[in-house]
Structures are given as structure tokens and as C-alpha cells.
Length: 343
Image 1 (tube, rainbow, N blue to C red):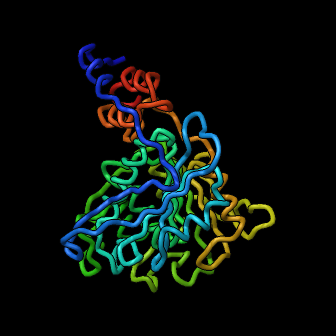
Image 2 (tube, rainbow, N blue to C red):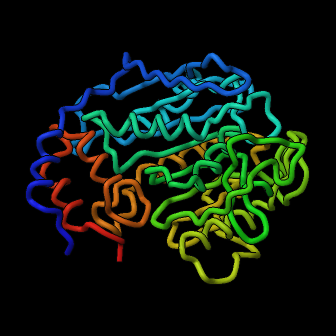
């Protein structure tokens, strides 16, 4: 066991502060500047928090990412009944899109997500161990970008709907994150930084065989991006989480009463759904997402709040920033008592 010195421990206690409460009227302002918006642009961010008593550990939070041409507020309406016990946070992207490769927006949306996740972890009624991402189409592609950010996001569950990994995000045997600028005219669209995703993360993808925009079996798409096959993409994700077997092939279990087939790796930690819903979701997909996001997070490294494979100052900062009725001395002692790499 590795411990910090007593004076430093006392210093950490002295700076701990009570956090604010996330509610329907919370205003979250995140402003970024880039060549399209050199003076800065502020993301509209919609929030919906369940009524009633706050769970002991706080509300799980799902960040919802809309598709190209969409916006955040309608995502709240769509998912309030699907995730009734979650706090929902739905930003709107610049030009109603997310920057993956060839979109209208060139915004560094992955930096916005990092800021948003860090900000959400400071609210006292939020369960910082259950911060989650769900995106549809263009938003699903941003979920995949977020999955391989370095340093990693402290997000425990990722759901990518009708957008599995593309060849910019995974090529030559590795996952890649984007450089500061994406460009469809350069090799791999500027995804030039190889990343090894941390383990202990949950990932669900939903893709449809009859999708006219995102090719299930891989290849070029009308959205200007070339995709892996959906079954290959989920296998690569499973490998990143520690799966060492052969890829699943042949007939797979079917969700009862639904045209949905499950590709389940690592006891469901990594799962792919093959469906027939074109470029969308059925009630069966929605129910599956609710069940997946309602499960407890994977906890094999006590104190590793940011999911980077070690307990350190990043985790300590998250604990101190969230100090209050939900986060307290037990969380702090867990971080201090497990300081160092996860074993």
C-alpha cells in the first residue's frame, strides 16, 4: 500500500469543497475557439434530471449525442422514458453536427466532451462512477472517438448507435485518436495518434444490416467515411478490453421477439447488436440500451475514478471536486490507500 504524507493529506482535506446540484435549470457553458469560430462558440447544452429522491450514490448520468442535423433538446425527449432513472445531458454540436472527418463542423468536440465530463463530476447529486455516453449516427461516431481518447475520459459505458468504428479510428492494427484538426484530404483524415484504450470499460454497438447510410459489412458510405465491418469493429473493441479468443461468427443468440442478434464478448462487457432497423432503433434496441446502461460499472481497481489504469492525482482531483454528501472521506481514503498502478 502506498500512502501520501500526513501534511499533504491535511492539505487535500482543507481544499475539499461542497459541490453544486445538477437540475433541470443548470446552465453548463462550454466555449471553444477554432479556425471556423476564432472568437469562440458556446455549445447549447440541455439537461434533464429525474424528479424524486436522489440515489445514495447520486444519479447515473448519460451524455446524449445527436445525429447530423439534429440537436440536443429532442434527445432528452426521446430518452427520458428510456432512461427514467438517469440524469440526461444533451449538447448540440456546431452546425448541428459533430466533427469526425468530413462534416460541416471542424470543432474539437472531443475537448468539449472532456470538459463536460469533468464538469458533471463536480455535482454532488451525480454518481461520478457512472458517467456514460450514448450517441446516434454522427453522435455514435463521436462516442467511438471518445472511447479512444488519450488521456482517457472517466466514462464507464459507451453506446454507439448506427455508427461502428471507421477506418480512420481503427487501422493498421491499432485504434487512433484525431490530431488537433481533421481533414478528409489527408491520410486517415488526420487520425494519426495510436491509442491503447484502458480496460474495465463497457461498450455496446448497434448496427443494422439494412442500413442505407452505414454499411454493415464495411466499406465506403454516403457520409464520406469508410467503415470497418460491424462484426470486425466489435471484435477489435473486445480485444482492447482483454478478449483473446477468435471473433464470433455464424448464428448468434436472438433477442426474444425482435429481429436483433447479440454478439456478446467478455460476459456482456462488450456487446454488438445486429438488427434490421435501417438507420435507427426499435423498441427492442431502446430496451437493450436501458438494461445495459442500468448495470453496475466494472470495478476491479478501487479508487481509479478516471479509468486510466492507475490511482493518482487525477482521481484525487475528482474526489475533491465532488466533495459533499455523496462523496466523502471513504472515497478519499480509497484513493489514498490504493495509490499507484492498478494490479
